[in-house]
Amino acid sequence: MDVTIQSLSDVSKEVEITATTEDLAPHFERAYHEHRKKIEIPGFRKGKAPLDMIKKIYGDLIENDSLNEIATEMYRKAVQEKELKPIGEPVLVDMDYKRGESFRCKIQYDVRPTIELKQYKGIAVDKIIHTVTDDEVEKELVRLQRANATMEDVETAADPEHIITATLQDLDDSGNPIAGRRSEGIRFYLADDQLEKPFKDALKNAQKGGDYTVQFEHKHGGETHSINTKISVTKIQKVTLAPLDDAFVAKVTKEKFTAVDSLRKGIREDITAYWKEQSERHVINSITSEIIKRHDFQVPESLIRTVLSGLLEEVKNDYPNKKLPDNFDFEKFNKENREYAVYQSKWALLREELIKAENITVTDEDLDKLAEAESAKIKIPKDRLINYYKSSEQIKDRLTGDKLIKILVDSAKIKEVPEKA
Image 1: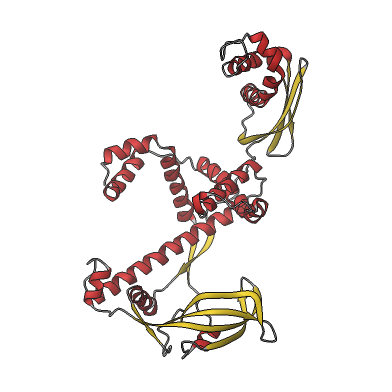
Image 2 (image 1 turned 90 degrees about the horizontal axis):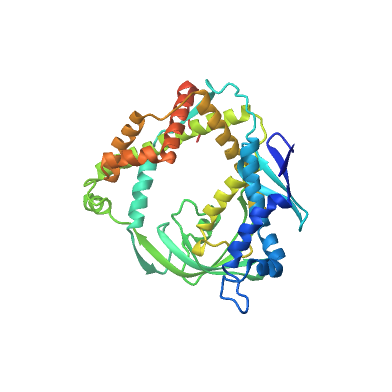
């Protein structure tokens, strides 16, 4: 077996493997015996036909069928003998076989880029500070009231606390209906902050059976398009909010809180905790983004493909039976998500280099602390958790990553700035 290696780029190489008939013989012999078990030839019991007859009748088919597996085995052997150190999945790009003469294949594989670490400590970042307002707390209370509201059919939408069900018919510039642009059963909650003002204005004091027209320029995602729609009201419901009293609080919180003031305090604490987490996440993202920006290196395509594959699996979960539709545009998906995949791949490579540079390891003490904290939450004995954690590379990787992030954040120059409205 002859092996030749060619560099295609800083992170991509190609190995060409040439094998003689002598090299191929043991592989083919194994393939013959495997296929012999499944082949039926008249006059012989299944799997008992003479090997020479198998070779004569099916030899060329069996040999060609086994070439991919042979290429894989020879590639693995080349990796060991030449100490190639590939990353990701290799790709078979060419294969040529002349029966009784020779076999040749080309396999491309990726290698880790050489990364020279730049300054990664002391990075200056802003920490956004969000001050929770009374209005935020009251809006959450109203949300709870609305979630437990009652409704009754009425004839007129006398105030914002009404839900209007209507049929929408898009119109052209002359006010004529556009064929195929009709939608039924559309609901408008007039008190919804997300409902655009032209709809609220048009449906103010709306009556059941009435027709109303809205015309305005709708802006979304940096684009603008014209809205010209007739709204035919088919149903109006009055929304009566649940009374905000101690009995209501005890009911919706399952007696976690028993008074309005205590719930209001709890909501403020929850919102504060949420924004604190968001602020800390923003700091981490800003630091990692700056580190990535300071390091310019080529990312192996195999890593990018791995990230895109993971994203695709997440998308599948959103479809029935976790199956993508037949018309799913894979090319468009990969193009739209490539930038993100490159970003994540770069950080994965940098993360490993930074962990080595900081000599970060996971100790038994680290695992013990984690088991102590998690044991009470998930109701599993601490000893069982420790045994699992010691055998879990995923847990160790998570702890190692947490340690790295702490080092980066602790060394950063963080400036607290108030959130802009």
